[in-house]
Image (cartoon, rainbow, N blue to C red; front, side, top):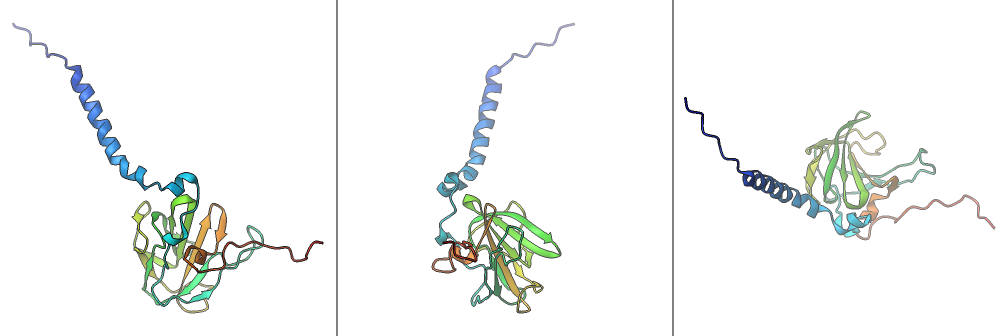
Length: 190
C-alpha cells in the first residue's frame, strides 16, 4: 500500500486570507468612521443650522419650553407643536435612532445626534428602528393624538437634551427660540 501523498503547507495562503479579511473589515467600517463629524470628535454640539422643524407647515408652538427649577422638578422639557393626526414627523437633524417604542404609555422616538445632542418626538407611530441612520428632514413616524399636556387634541412634543441638560429645542433652529435657559435667584443679592 502506498501512503497518501502529503499535502504541501502553504503559509502564504493564511497570510493572504488574514490580510484580505482585515482589508474588508476596514472598508466596511470606513463609512461609520467618516460619520463622526468634527463637532462630535471635539465633544461640541452640532451647528444649529443643521436642524429643521420636525413638523410640516404650519407648525404653531402651542406650549413653550419651561425649564424645571430643580433636576426632578416640574416643568415642560420641550415644546408642543400643533399638528394633524397621522401627519409626518421629521427628524430634526442627522443622527441614529436611539429608541423607538413605548414609554409610560406613549410612543416615543429619540435620535442621537453628533456632539451628544439627543432629540425626542412623541406621541408618534414610529416608522424607524433602533440603530437606523436618519437624515435631517426624513420621516421618522406619524403624529398621533394623545399628548396629555397639549392644549389641542393633536400635537407633537419635541424635546432636546445635551448631555443631562434639557434645552429649548427651538434654539436648534436658525433665529428661533429663547436661547440657553439660565435660572436666576428669586431675590437679588446685594
